[in-house]
Structures are given as structure tokens and as C-alpha cells.
Length: 368
Image 1 (tube, rainbow, N blue to C red):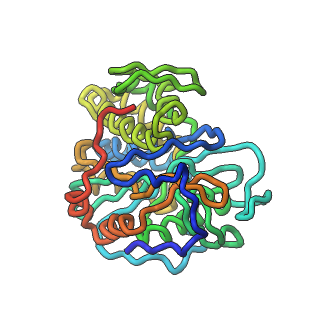
Image 2: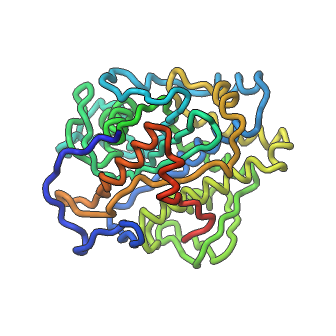
């Protein structure tokens, strides 16, 4: 069952309204500019799923496994959630955002030597695969979700945006924070670096997405026209990281991530890619060289266990929230604790299909 967060100081609600409730439109948020590396997460998640669908040979998968960077993702972790259902898998995907300058401690002063160095996890998703391996659920946790970041090895120990955990304590503190927030045990971790995302998209010859209304990104100056847009690597990167110029800011960007991921997986798993060894190898090579995984993560095991999965078997969910509020002078996303407990409790019990029956997933194929 998901754990409730300790009470914070009474929030001041932006514009006097709580946005993001069912049926309501979330409010656009004003925040400092960031070059979000959300594309990294999309690429890494697609790579794992495409590899499973492709059914590549044992020798080739072994070769890809050997190219992965390894890390002790669970170092120093104790008092972790238990595992309720054998065979179900929860994989944490992190897209890292490298920045210039010092890390920050919970009080906002520079801190050196933190495990995350100059990075924050600008994209956080949990891939839940049920024990029967017939479906998969990608659950996005908004990066500005306000949570308790527990202390680990002298880092953390404060309430903050969830993406600060990576800067303060690297992957282990991020795992601990996500487990503390959700009450769900993380089995594996995949971190995606920036290099490789554009190569992945270009290896497929680009990806098509549908936009409802013409919009220009004021930062990149790129225009996405109403209708089908064919995106190469550079355009895809601009598409998934834009939030300025979109009516609902970061919330529209989350939907774009999910739309692009679905389109990328569909393109990568269509017959034209799977039957073309050169194109498939180019895509998977570009993907795996960008990944850092926990020491026990195995592409061979993934390919074997989840070989029946197809892109149409995947549903996209966002962890329930009440939209943007201002707390202690910063714009944050406030979790809807009651609804979040329902979702993450379903993940723990491996009953997400039942939860979705009452809470339809975001399976949009087009958007802003």
C-alpha cells in the first residue's frame, strides 16, 4: 500500500484554484527554464520493450547486455517494501538532466560530492509488468511532485520535489524516495543518458506524431503544425521537452512523452523494422549504449520473460495529483494521496487492470 506523506505547511494554491482533478484542466506553471531530458527516458523504455518484441537471438542479446553500464542501484538501502506477488516486475526508469553548477542540499546551499553530481532526474516512470506478463503499465511521476526525500548516507532528509533526490543521493536515494512515496518495491533501475536519443529516432527514419493545433515552441523556435508531423531526432527532442507555449505546461508535456513513446515503439516494432536486421541493429545499438542499469538487470531475461508483449498491450498512467500549487515559494505538483494510494496499492497487489477499469488510462495517440 502506498505510504502517506507527513503533513506540510498549508499550501497556497496557485491562482486560488486546485487544478488537475478529474475532468479539470491543470494550470500552466511558471518556472525557471530547464532543458528537460525526457527524451532519454522515452528512448530507454522503448529500447527495452522493442528488444522484447523483436525476439533477437541469444548471442546478440548477450552482446547488448555486455554494452550496458552497471551500477549498484540499491546500495545502502534497508527497510524496503516487501514483494506481494511473485513474478510481477517494477522497473524504475530515470531520465537524467545534467546541469552546470553545484548540487544542492535540502536547504538550498551548495553541496559537493553528492552521488548525483550535477544531475537531476527530470523524468521518472515506473514500468509495471504483471505476473502473467500479458500487459504492461507505464506510470509517470511528475518530476515536481512534492514528497518526503528520506535521508541516505548524509543526503536528503527533507521535503522537496521528487527529482531532487537524484541530485542529492544519486540512484540509491531516488529508489528509496520512490519506494517511500509509492510503497512499491523497485526490482530494477534503468537510467538513460542524453547521447543516443536522436540516433535512435534517426535509425528508424523518423517518427510520426499527430498534433491537434499548430503550436510554436518559444524556446527552440520550432513549429509543430496541426496534423501529422514527421520528426527526425532533433525535432523529436524538441517535441518531447517543450512545455512553454502549451496550454497546460508540464502536464501537456507528460502527455507528449506518452504519445511519442507509443509512436516510437510502434515504428520500431512494425514489420519494416523487425524484418530489417541493419535498421533493427542500428536502433538497438543506439539505445543500449545510453543505458545504465542495476547489477542484476538482464536484457536476456527480459527478452525471454516478456516475449509476448506488444505495443498495444501497454497502457500509460500518470500518478494522481491535484495539480500545481505554491509551497514555500516554489511551484510544485501536489499528489492526490487518496487516489495515489489506490493506484500504487494496485501495483503492489498486481491488480492494475482492475484499477484501470475504474480509472481509464491516457492512451491518446495525438495531442497538443
